[in-house]
Image (cartoon, rainbow, N blue to C red):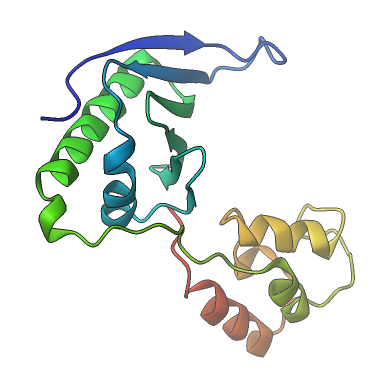
Length: 173
């Protein structure tokens, strides 16, 4: 077993004290650097950095960054949710470590949609019907998985199909 213990730190965003969400930092007792490329391969990290080592995931609507000695989880409802995600990650980390001989380590993040390719498929009217001030803002949100073709009312059927096909090539959680 690679990961055994940790200490958690719960943070409320200072810039928005009225915010309901919590941020969680889990300080690890062990250095888990060596498992990061295996964890990336198993869970499909959307970003992987070699130096300093870190893999980030979008899972269950949360952004999770796993570093050698800490794990950061954003936008939690409460401490119970943070504990559940931490326990799940502990199992995933230890499982990936135990099965590392069967896993091809992945040293790159998952491919990401390109904002400019999404923008090419939009009407480029900056009409605001999607709730965004410009099509560029919409394209940026679509590239991050926050908007889909259905959120753009003036998008024609053919363009909608093309945008869905393009975005469908990428993993969003």
